[in-house]
Length: 272
Image (cartoon, rainbow, N blue to C red; front, side, top):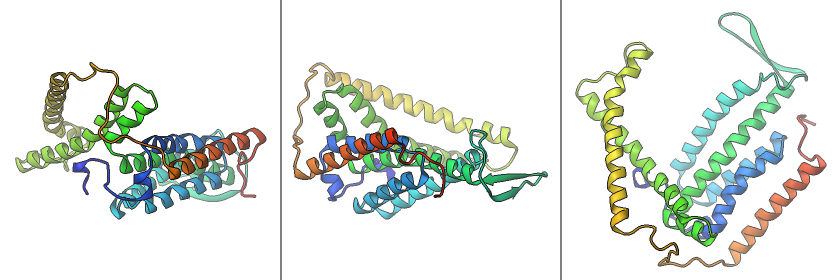
């Protein structure tokens, strides 16, 4: 299934069958859990659990490869920046990176551990949200906000943004192909000339997006959106045994993380 059809991947895995409230709790758990630890081995284990859940969710090999590709880019950029951060110092030198213009950068043990931990602090929440929207329909997202007594308009706005994000990417691709077929060159020239070349792409895209927003707002007004604050749903969500088990596991994980932060478990930047 391509992104043109939305971020949700249809399936019948245990992650798909979980109550939408439990899946929302899962997403928030992956956002907050890494912040309790400074040890990259612990956060790396959390990321490994996420990858296992992604495989068991059967969201598709292409989706998993995309997550791993994005993770590789984030890892490379974050590692280069944070490994030489002035916030950490000390430890033995692991390797030296020579610079083309002269000089070199020393990567110490403390710097590498600090960089690895910051990589997982970014990867885990981003990947967790990506898995959440892959196994949760826009309908379930809005329903979970309503069941948790949160403003359903926020849930609707969130699900609508997720739905139109792939549409925007698809429109951008179509406009680029159309403009390049008319002779638009986006490959040659310096960086300023290339940026200027994207103007014929951004303007039609902006016009199309504004038109889509206007059509959506008119459609919502004709359906009297927001008149009745209490929403009804065709398929009512009910908590089952797997939902309770998953909720207990996540609550225990959060409780243990708070305890670990208090007593100092996973707070050191050492290999030992």
